Amino acid sequence: QVQLVDVGGGLVQAGGSLRLSCAASGRTFSSFRMAWFRQAPGKEREFVASILWSGIFTTYADSVKGRFTISRDNDKNTVYLQMNSLKPEDTAVYYCAAGPVTKIAYDYWGQGTQVTVSS
Image 1 (cartoon, rainbow, N blue to C red):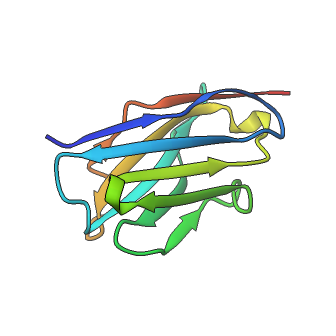
Image 2: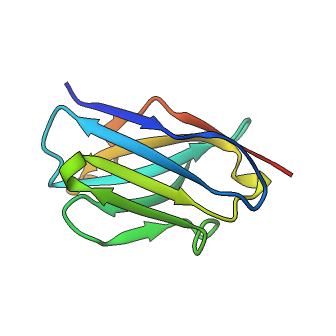
Image 3: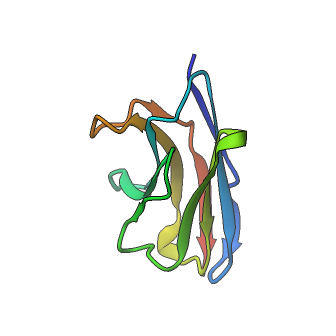
């Protein structure tokens, strides 16, 4: 059974940093794309960043470029999202997702972790 466990959220002041982690288990992820999404209250879920499990190609939403970094540790089956220079508008529930590179959609989702940035 595939499981994504995302942790690392919390309360931080504007300008601060947090690192989210997503531990993946239950199958081989070598042909998967891993991503982070977020959903703020009253808003739709939006893409934040993605990375190929077997490569270093990454993509970012314009709103986080230069501030967030996605990375992965294949030995630990874990994907990270380092978030720096956080802003109040980054406040959201952050979700880890995994999907095969042959599909646009993501098949697996984490339970979400709350990030709150105070001004």
